[in-house]
Length: 55
Length: 409
Image (cartoon, rainbow over the protein chains, first blue to last red):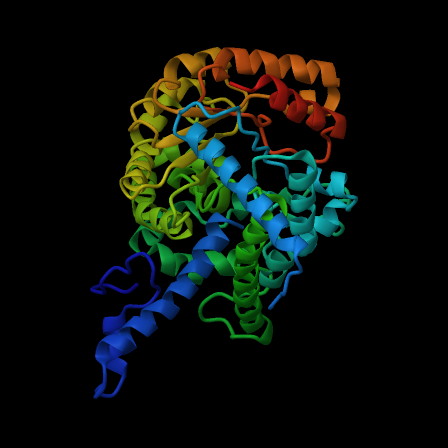
Protein backbone atom coordinates (compact mmCIF):
# COMPACT_ATOMS: atom_id res chain seq x y z
CA UNK A 1 0.00 0.00 0.00
CA UNK A 2 1.53 3.30 -1.01
CA UNK A 3 1.42 6.51 1.01
CA UNK A 4 -1.92 8.24 1.14
CA UNK A 5 -3.90 5.16 0.20
CA UNK A 6 -6.80 4.07 2.37
CA UNK A 7 -6.23 0.91 4.41
CA UNK A 8 -7.77 -2.25 3.02
CA UNK A 9 -10.48 -3.51 5.38
CA UNK A 10 -11.06 -7.20 6.13
CA UNK A 11 -12.90 -9.17 3.45
CA UNK A 12 -11.40 -7.57 0.36
CA UNK A 13 -8.00 -7.16 -1.31
CA UNK A 14 -8.60 -4.14 -3.53
CA UNK A 15 -10.84 -1.18 -2.79
CA UNK A 16 -13.96 -0.77 -4.92
CA UNK A 17 -13.41 2.99 -4.93
CA UNK A 18 -10.13 2.45 -6.78
CA UNK A 19 -11.59 -0.11 -9.16
CA UNK A 20 -14.51 2.16 -9.99
CA UNK A 21 -12.09 4.85 -11.16
CA UNK A 22 -10.77 2.46 -13.80
CA UNK A 23 -14.22 1.71 -15.25
CA UNK A 24 -16.22 3.75 -17.72
CA UNK A 25 -19.26 5.40 -16.22
CA UNK A 26 -21.66 2.73 -15.01
CA UNK A 27 -24.96 3.54 -16.64
CA UNK A 28 -26.81 0.63 -15.08
CA UNK A 29 -27.04 -0.57 -11.49
CA UNK A 30 -23.84 0.61 -9.76
CA UNK A 31 -24.59 -1.20 -6.52
CA UNK A 32 -24.89 -4.52 -8.33
CA UNK A 33 -21.49 -4.07 -9.94
CA UNK A 34 -19.98 -3.12 -6.59
CA UNK A 35 -21.64 -6.03 -4.79
CA UNK A 36 -20.42 -8.65 -7.27
CA UNK A 37 -16.94 -7.10 -7.34
CA UNK A 38 -16.70 -7.36 -3.57
CA UNK A 39 -18.10 -10.89 -3.47
CA UNK A 40 -15.34 -12.01 -5.80
CA UNK A 41 -12.84 -9.98 -3.79
CA UNK A 42 -13.85 -11.98 -0.74
CA UNK A 43 -12.80 -15.20 -2.51
CA UNK A 44 -9.27 -13.89 -3.01
CA UNK A 45 -9.24 -12.64 0.57
CA UNK A 46 -10.40 -16.04 1.82
CA UNK A 47 -7.64 -17.68 -0.19
CA UNK A 48 -4.72 -15.75 1.24
CA UNK A 49 -5.97 -15.60 4.82
CA UNK A 50 -6.77 -19.30 4.94
CA UNK A 51 -3.35 -20.04 3.50
CA UNK A 52 -2.03 -18.18 6.54
CA UNK A 53 -4.41 -19.39 9.22
CA UNK A 54 -5.59 -22.83 8.11
CA UNK A 55 -2.73 -24.27 6.05
CA UNK B 1 -27.53 -36.08 -7.47
CA UNK B 2 -31.15 -37.20 -7.27
CA UNK B 3 -31.88 -40.35 -5.29
CA UNK B 4 -35.19 -42.18 -5.07
CA UNK B 5 -35.54 -44.23 -1.93
CA UNK B 6 -37.47 -47.47 -1.52
CA UNK B 7 -39.74 -48.07 1.46
CA UNK B 8 -36.93 -49.07 3.83
CA UNK B 9 -34.64 -46.11 3.39
CA UNK B 10 -36.80 -43.25 4.59
CA UNK B 11 -37.20 -45.05 7.93
CA UNK B 12 -33.44 -45.43 8.19
CA UNK B 13 -32.98 -41.77 7.38
CA UNK B 14 -35.58 -40.81 9.95
CA UNK B 15 -33.77 -42.93 12.53
CA UNK B 16 -30.48 -41.25 11.72
CA UNK B 17 -32.08 -37.83 11.89
CA UNK B 18 -33.60 -38.67 15.27
CA UNK B 19 -30.19 -39.88 16.43
CA UNK B 20 -28.60 -36.70 15.09
CA UNK B 21 -31.07 -34.51 16.94
CA UNK B 22 -30.53 -36.48 20.15
CA UNK B 23 -26.77 -36.07 19.86
CA UNK B 24 -26.99 -32.42 18.88
CA UNK B 25 -29.06 -31.72 21.99
CA UNK B 26 -26.61 -33.67 24.16
CA UNK B 27 -23.61 -31.89 22.69
CA UNK B 28 -24.99 -28.35 22.72
CA UNK B 29 -26.37 -28.77 26.24
CA UNK B 30 -22.90 -29.68 27.45
CA UNK B 31 -21.31 -26.86 25.40
CA UNK B 32 -23.42 -24.40 27.37
CA UNK B 33 -22.32 -25.96 30.66
CA UNK B 34 -25.60 -27.81 31.08
CA UNK B 35 -26.31 -31.39 32.12
CA UNK B 36 -27.51 -33.56 29.23
CA UNK B 37 -28.68 -37.20 29.51
CA UNK B 38 -25.08 -38.35 29.43
CA UNK B 39 -21.59 -37.07 28.74
CA UNK B 40 -21.18 -36.47 25.00
CA UNK B 41 -18.19 -38.05 23.27
CA UNK B 42 -16.36 -35.88 20.75
CA UNK B 43 -12.89 -37.21 20.04
CA UNK B 44 -10.68 -35.13 17.79
CA UNK B 45 -9.35 -38.11 15.87
CA UNK B 46 -6.89 -37.33 13.09
CA UNK B 47 -4.44 -39.96 11.80
CA UNK B 48 -6.15 -42.46 14.10
CA UNK B 49 -8.93 -42.60 11.51
CA UNK B 50 -6.43 -43.92 8.94
CA UNK B 51 -5.22 -46.62 11.28
CA UNK B 52 -8.77 -47.71 12.06
CA UNK B 53 -10.07 -47.58 8.49
CA UNK B 54 -7.04 -49.31 6.97
CA UNK B 55 -5.36 -46.41 5.21
CA UNK B 56 -1.87 -44.97 5.42
CA UNK B 57 -1.26 -41.43 6.65
CA UNK B 58 -0.28 -40.57 3.11
CA UNK B 59 -3.63 -41.75 1.76
CA UNK B 60 -5.77 -39.71 4.13
CA UNK B 61 -3.55 -36.64 4.02
CA UNK B 62 -3.16 -36.51 0.26
CA UNK B 63 -6.67 -37.62 -0.72
CA UNK B 64 -9.22 -35.86 1.44
CA UNK B 65 -11.98 -38.10 0.10
CA UNK B 66 -10.35 -41.03 1.88
CA UNK B 67 -9.96 -38.89 5.01
CA UNK B 68 -13.66 -38.04 4.91
CA UNK B 69 -14.58 -41.71 4.45
CA UNK B 70 -12.32 -42.72 7.35
CA UNK B 71 -13.86 -40.05 9.61
CA UNK B 72 -17.35 -41.31 8.79
CA UNK B 73 -16.37 -44.92 9.41
CA UNK B 74 -15.04 -44.03 12.85
CA UNK B 75 -18.11 -41.95 13.68
CA UNK B 76 -20.37 -44.79 12.64
CA UNK B 77 -18.51 -47.67 14.27
CA UNK B 78 -17.68 -45.97 17.58
CA UNK B 79 -21.09 -44.37 17.97
CA UNK B 80 -19.65 -40.95 18.78
CA UNK B 81 -21.80 -37.89 19.30
CA UNK B 82 -19.69 -35.40 17.38
CA UNK B 83 -16.56 -35.48 15.24
CA UNK B 84 -14.64 -33.15 12.96
CA UNK B 85 -15.30 -33.89 9.29
CA UNK B 86 -11.56 -34.18 8.72
CA UNK B 87 -9.31 -33.61 11.69
CA UNK B 88 -6.23 -34.31 9.57
CA UNK B 89 -7.38 -31.08 7.96
CA UNK B 90 -4.25 -30.20 6.00
CA UNK B 91 -4.92 -31.64 2.56
CA UNK B 92 -1.42 -31.91 1.15
CA UNK B 93 -2.78 -32.00 -2.39
CA UNK B 94 -3.77 -28.39 -1.81
CA UNK B 95 -0.53 -27.37 -0.13
CA UNK B 96 1.42 -28.97 -2.96
CA UNK B 97 -0.66 -27.15 -5.58
CA UNK B 98 0.30 -23.86 -3.93
CA UNK B 99 3.87 -25.01 -3.36
CA UNK B 100 3.94 -24.41 0.41
CA UNK B 101 7.40 -25.12 1.74
CA UNK B 102 6.66 -25.62 5.39
CA UNK B 103 4.98 -29.00 5.24
CA UNK B 104 6.59 -32.37 5.61
CA UNK B 105 4.28 -34.41 3.39
CA UNK B 106 3.65 -38.10 4.19
CA UNK B 107 5.05 -40.33 1.47
CA UNK B 108 7.32 -37.54 0.18
CA UNK B 109 9.18 -35.85 3.03
CA UNK B 110 8.34 -38.36 5.75
CA UNK B 111 7.25 -41.97 5.64
CA UNK B 112 3.80 -42.81 4.35
CA UNK B 113 2.80 -43.89 7.85
CA UNK B 114 3.85 -40.67 9.57
CA UNK B 115 1.48 -37.76 9.96
CA UNK B 116 2.21 -34.51 8.15
CA UNK B 117 4.73 -32.20 9.80
CA UNK B 118 5.21 -28.45 10.14
CA UNK B 119 8.78 -27.44 9.38
CA UNK B 120 9.72 -24.11 10.90
CA UNK B 121 12.58 -22.44 9.03
CA UNK B 122 15.74 -21.29 10.80
CA UNK B 123 15.68 -17.78 12.19
CA UNK B 124 17.76 -16.52 9.24
CA UNK B 125 15.25 -17.93 6.75
CA UNK B 126 12.10 -16.74 8.52
CA UNK B 127 9.21 -15.89 6.18
CA UNK B 128 9.07 -12.36 7.60
CA UNK B 129 12.12 -10.30 8.53
CA UNK B 130 12.60 -8.49 11.83
CA UNK B 131 12.34 -5.08 10.15
CA UNK B 132 9.06 -5.82 8.37
CA UNK B 133 6.58 -5.38 11.23
CA UNK B 134 5.63 -1.95 9.93
CA UNK B 135 4.84 -3.28 6.44
CA UNK B 136 2.75 -6.07 7.91
CA UNK B 137 0.85 -3.68 10.17
CA UNK B 138 0.22 -1.15 7.39
CA UNK B 139 -1.42 -3.58 4.98
CA UNK B 140 -1.66 -7.16 6.25
CA UNK B 141 -3.46 -8.56 3.20
CA UNK B 142 -1.07 -6.91 0.75
CA UNK B 143 1.90 -8.14 2.78
CA UNK B 144 0.63 -11.70 2.64
CA UNK B 145 0.12 -11.64 -1.13
CA UNK B 146 3.19 -9.66 -2.09
CA UNK B 147 5.84 -10.58 0.47
CA UNK B 148 4.84 -13.65 2.44
CA UNK B 149 3.43 -15.88 -0.30
CA UNK B 150 6.51 -15.63 -2.55
CA UNK B 151 8.62 -16.71 0.43
CA UNK B 152 6.49 -19.66 1.55
CA UNK B 153 5.81 -21.02 -1.93
CA UNK B 154 8.22 -22.79 -4.24
CA UNK B 155 6.14 -21.53 -7.18
CA UNK B 156 5.30 -17.87 -6.52
CA UNK B 157 7.67 -15.11 -7.58
CA UNK B 158 8.08 -11.83 -5.65
CA UNK B 159 6.67 -8.56 -6.97
CA UNK B 160 8.93 -7.33 -9.78
CA UNK B 161 10.13 -10.77 -10.80
CA UNK B 162 8.73 -12.41 -13.95
CA UNK B 163 5.14 -13.64 -13.74
CA UNK B 164 6.00 -17.19 -14.68
CA UNK B 165 3.75 -20.03 -15.77
CA UNK B 166 4.37 -21.77 -12.45
CA UNK B 167 3.61 -18.57 -10.55
CA UNK B 168 0.26 -18.21 -12.27
CA UNK B 169 -0.61 -21.87 -11.86
CA UNK B 170 0.04 -21.72 -8.12
CA UNK B 171 -2.74 -19.18 -7.61
CA UNK B 172 -5.13 -20.80 -10.06
CA UNK B 173 -4.64 -24.36 -8.83
CA UNK B 174 -4.45 -23.28 -5.21
CA UNK B 175 -7.63 -21.23 -5.41
CA UNK B 176 -9.61 -23.87 -7.25
CA UNK B 177 -8.35 -26.61 -4.94
CA UNK B 178 -9.27 -24.61 -1.84
CA UNK B 179 -12.75 -23.94 -3.18
CA UNK B 180 -13.12 -27.64 -3.98
CA UNK B 181 -11.93 -28.72 -0.53
CA UNK B 182 -13.98 -26.25 1.50
CA UNK B 183 -17.09 -27.01 -0.54
CA UNK B 184 -16.60 -30.72 0.12
CA UNK B 185 -16.94 -30.11 3.87
CA UNK B 186 -20.58 -29.20 3.32
CA UNK B 187 -21.24 -32.58 1.73
CA UNK B 188 -19.16 -34.32 4.42
CA UNK B 189 -21.16 -32.74 7.23
CA UNK B 190 -24.39 -33.73 5.51
CA UNK B 191 -23.16 -37.33 5.09
CA UNK B 192 -22.12 -37.44 8.75
CA UNK B 193 -25.63 -36.40 9.63
CA UNK B 194 -27.53 -38.68 7.25
CA UNK B 195 -25.32 -41.79 7.32
CA UNK B 196 -24.08 -41.70 10.90
CA UNK B 197 -26.38 -39.35 12.79
CA UNK B 198 -23.22 -37.60 13.96
CA UNK B 199 -22.82 -33.89 14.64
CA UNK B 200 -20.03 -31.89 13.00
CA UNK B 201 -18.22 -30.78 16.15
CA UNK B 202 -16.81 -27.39 15.20
CA UNK B 203 -17.03 -24.85 12.44
CA UNK B 204 -14.52 -22.16 11.63
CA UNK B 205 -11.01 -21.35 12.68
CA UNK B 206 -9.28 -18.86 14.92
CA UNK B 207 -5.68 -18.36 15.87
CA UNK B 208 -4.27 -15.69 18.15
CA UNK B 209 -2.42 -12.81 16.48
CA UNK B 210 0.78 -13.54 18.41
CA UNK B 211 0.61 -17.24 17.55
CA UNK B 212 0.25 -16.39 13.87
CA UNK B 213 3.42 -14.30 14.01
CA UNK B 214 5.32 -17.17 15.61
CA UNK B 215 3.81 -19.97 13.52
CA UNK B 216 3.86 -18.53 10.02
CA UNK B 217 5.80 -15.28 9.91
CA UNK B 218 8.77 -14.80 12.23
CA UNK B 219 9.10 -18.29 13.68
CA UNK B 220 9.14 -18.86 17.42
CA UNK B 221 12.81 -17.90 17.90
CA UNK B 222 12.45 -14.76 15.81
CA UNK B 223 9.36 -13.71 17.73
CA UNK B 224 11.04 -14.41 21.06
CA UNK B 225 13.86 -12.04 20.08
CA UNK B 226 11.42 -9.43 18.81
CA UNK B 227 9.45 -9.50 22.07
CA UNK B 228 12.63 -8.46 23.86
CA UNK B 229 13.96 -5.99 21.29
CA UNK B 230 10.87 -4.41 19.70
CA UNK B 231 7.74 -5.33 21.66
CA UNK B 232 5.88 -2.20 20.54
CA UNK B 233 6.18 -3.22 16.90
CA UNK B 234 5.00 -6.74 17.72
CA UNK B 235 1.99 -5.28 19.50
CA UNK B 236 1.15 -2.99 16.58
CA UNK B 237 1.33 -5.90 14.15
CA UNK B 238 -0.88 -8.03 16.40
CA UNK B 239 -3.40 -5.19 16.56
CA UNK B 240 -3.37 -4.96 12.76
CA UNK B 241 -4.03 -8.71 12.47
CA UNK B 242 -6.96 -8.65 14.89
CA UNK B 243 -9.77 -7.50 12.53
CA UNK B 244 -8.64 -9.97 9.88
CA UNK B 245 -8.48 -12.95 12.23
CA UNK B 246 -11.88 -11.96 13.57
CA UNK B 247 -13.20 -11.82 10.01
CA UNK B 248 -11.78 -15.26 9.16
CA UNK B 249 -13.30 -16.74 12.33
CA UNK B 250 -16.68 -15.11 11.84
CA UNK B 251 -17.04 -15.97 8.16
CA UNK B 252 -16.08 -19.61 8.73
CA UNK B 253 -18.27 -20.04 11.83
CA UNK B 254 -21.46 -22.08 12.06
CA UNK B 255 -24.26 -19.87 10.68
CA UNK B 256 -26.70 -21.72 12.96
CA UNK B 257 -24.45 -20.80 15.93
CA UNK B 258 -24.77 -24.29 17.39
CA UNK B 259 -21.16 -25.51 17.42
CA UNK B 260 -18.07 -23.55 18.43
CA UNK B 261 -15.26 -22.05 16.40
CA UNK B 262 -12.02 -24.01 16.79
CA UNK B 263 -9.32 -21.87 18.40
CA UNK B 264 -5.95 -23.61 18.20
CA UNK B 265 -3.64 -22.39 20.94
CA UNK B 266 0.05 -22.78 20.32
CA UNK B 267 2.91 -20.89 22.00
CA UNK B 268 1.27 -17.90 23.63
CA UNK B 269 1.61 -19.19 27.18
CA UNK B 270 4.24 -19.25 29.92
CA UNK B 271 6.98 -20.43 29.51
CA UNK B 272 7.04 -19.91 25.72
CA UNK B 273 6.43 -16.23 26.41
CA UNK B 274 6.64 -14.31 29.68
CA UNK B 275 3.62 -13.48 31.79
CA UNK B 276 4.27 -9.83 30.95
CA UNK B 277 4.02 -10.50 27.22
CA UNK B 278 0.90 -12.58 27.77
CA UNK B 279 -0.68 -9.72 29.69
CA UNK B 280 0.46 -6.90 27.40
CA UNK B 281 0.34 -8.48 23.92
CA UNK B 282 -1.14 -11.98 23.63
CA UNK B 283 -4.28 -11.53 25.68
CA UNK B 284 -5.17 -7.90 24.85
CA UNK B 285 -5.07 -8.75 21.13
CA UNK B 286 -7.06 -11.97 21.56
CA UNK B 287 -9.69 -11.23 24.18
CA UNK B 288 -11.58 -8.63 22.10
CA UNK B 289 -11.88 -11.16 19.26
CA UNK B 290 -13.43 -13.76 21.58
CA UNK B 291 -15.79 -11.16 23.03
CA UNK B 292 -16.78 -9.89 19.60
CA UNK B 293 -17.51 -13.41 18.39
CA UNK B 294 -19.63 -14.02 21.47
CA UNK B 295 -21.57 -10.82 20.83
CA UNK B 296 -22.40 -12.36 17.43
CA UNK B 297 -23.54 -15.56 19.17
CA UNK B 298 -20.48 -17.70 18.43
CA UNK B 299 -18.78 -19.79 21.08
CA UNK B 300 -15.05 -20.39 20.81
CA UNK B 301 -13.42 -23.71 21.65
CA UNK B 302 -10.11 -22.99 23.42
CA UNK B 303 -8.05 -25.97 22.28
CA UNK B 304 -5.38 -25.41 24.93
CA UNK B 305 -2.54 -27.52 23.64
CA UNK B 306 0.16 -27.92 26.29
CA UNK B 307 -0.21 -26.20 29.65
CA UNK B 308 -2.08 -22.93 30.08
CA UNK B 309 -2.46 -23.10 33.85
CA UNK B 310 -0.78 -19.72 34.39
CA UNK B 311 -3.53 -18.00 32.43
CA UNK B 312 -6.74 -19.63 33.60
CA UNK B 313 -7.69 -16.62 35.72
CA UNK B 314 -7.50 -14.40 32.63
CA UNK B 315 -9.73 -16.79 30.68
CA UNK B 316 -12.17 -16.86 33.60
CA UNK B 317 -12.92 -13.17 32.98
CA UNK B 318 -14.58 -13.94 29.65
CA UNK B 319 -18.38 -13.84 29.48
CA UNK B 320 -20.15 -16.94 30.76
CA UNK B 321 -20.48 -19.70 28.11
CA UNK B 322 -18.51 -17.64 25.57
CA UNK B 323 -15.87 -20.37 25.35
CA UNK B 324 -15.33 -24.07 25.92
CA UNK B 325 -12.01 -24.98 27.51
CA UNK B 326 -10.25 -28.07 26.22
CA UNK B 327 -7.74 -29.61 28.62
CA UNK B 328 -4.50 -31.05 27.34
CA UNK B 329 -1.83 -31.21 30.06
CA UNK B 330 -3.37 -28.82 32.58
CA UNK B 331 -4.23 -29.87 36.12
CA UNK B 332 -7.87 -30.92 35.87
CA UNK B 333 -8.55 -29.96 39.49
CA UNK B 334 -7.28 -26.42 38.95
CA UNK B 335 -9.11 -26.00 35.66
CA UNK B 336 -12.30 -27.18 37.32
CA UNK B 337 -11.86 -24.77 40.23
CA UNK B 338 -11.14 -21.72 38.07
CA UNK B 339 -13.32 -22.23 35.01
CA UNK B 340 -16.08 -24.75 35.62
CA UNK B 341 -18.61 -22.36 37.07
CA UNK B 342 -18.82 -20.43 33.79
CA UNK B 343 -17.61 -22.76 31.05
CA UNK B 344 -17.89 -26.24 29.62
CA UNK B 345 -14.71 -28.34 29.75
CA UNK B 346 -13.49 -31.13 27.48
CA UNK B 347 -10.57 -33.52 27.13
CA UNK B 348 -8.14 -34.62 29.80
CA UNK B 349 -7.41 -38.20 28.66
CA UNK B 350 -3.65 -38.20 27.93
CA UNK B 351 -2.60 -39.24 24.46
CA UNK B 352 0.36 -41.10 25.93
CA UNK B 353 -2.11 -43.26 27.85
CA UNK B 354 -4.13 -43.92 24.69
CA UNK B 355 -0.90 -44.91 22.90
CA UNK B 356 0.93 -46.90 25.57
CA UNK B 357 -1.57 -47.70 28.31
CA UNK B 358 -3.99 -50.56 28.75
CA UNK B 359 -7.77 -50.39 28.35
CA UNK B 360 -8.13 -50.69 32.13
CA UNK B 361 -5.80 -47.73 32.66
CA UNK B 362 -7.84 -45.74 30.15
CA UNK B 363 -11.06 -46.61 31.98
CA UNK B 364 -9.47 -45.61 35.30
CA UNK B 365 -8.43 -42.24 33.88
CA UNK B 366 -11.85 -41.64 32.34
CA UNK B 367 -13.45 -42.38 35.73
CA UNK B 368 -11.11 -39.96 37.47
CA UNK B 369 -11.82 -37.20 34.93
CA UNK B 370 -15.58 -37.74 35.01
CA UNK B 371 -15.64 -37.86 38.81
CA UNK B 372 -13.47 -34.74 39.09
CA UNK B 373 -14.79 -32.40 36.42
CA UNK B 374 -17.76 -34.07 34.74
CA UNK B 375 -20.23 -34.99 37.46
CA UNK B 376 -22.35 -31.86 37.19
CA UNK B 377 -22.57 -31.69 33.39
CA UNK B 378 -20.70 -29.29 31.16
CA UNK B 379 -18.07 -31.84 30.23
CA UNK B 380 -17.29 -33.45 26.86
CA UNK B 381 -15.20 -36.62 26.71
CA UNK B 382 -12.13 -36.37 24.49
CA UNK B 383 -8.45 -37.14 24.41
CA UNK B 384 -6.07 -34.45 25.62
CA UNK B 385 -4.79 -33.65 22.15
CA UNK B 386 -5.51 -34.63 18.57
CA UNK B 387 -5.43 -38.41 18.29
CA UNK B 388 -2.86 -39.71 15.86
CA UNK B 389 -2.05 -43.20 14.65
CA UNK B 390 -0.10 -44.12 17.76
CA UNK B 391 -3.33 -44.54 19.75
CA UNK B 392 -4.41 -48.14 20.28
CA UNK B 393 -7.80 -48.97 18.86
CA UNK B 394 -8.74 -50.93 22.00
CA UNK B 395 -7.95 -47.87 24.12
CA UNK B 396 -10.15 -45.58 22.05
CA UNK B 397 -12.86 -48.25 22.34
CA UNK B 398 -12.36 -48.36 26.11
CA UNK B 399 -12.68 -44.56 26.39
CA UNK B 400 -15.86 -44.71 24.33
CA UNK B 401 -17.48 -47.68 26.07
CA UNK B 402 -16.67 -46.46 29.55
CA UNK B 403 -18.19 -43.05 28.85
CA UNK B 404 -21.31 -44.63 27.40
CA UNK B 405 -21.71 -46.65 30.59
CA UNK B 406 -20.38 -44.45 33.37
CA UNK B 407 -21.13 -41.05 31.84
CA UNK B 408 -24.91 -41.35 32.19
CA UNK B 409 -26.41 -38.65 34.41
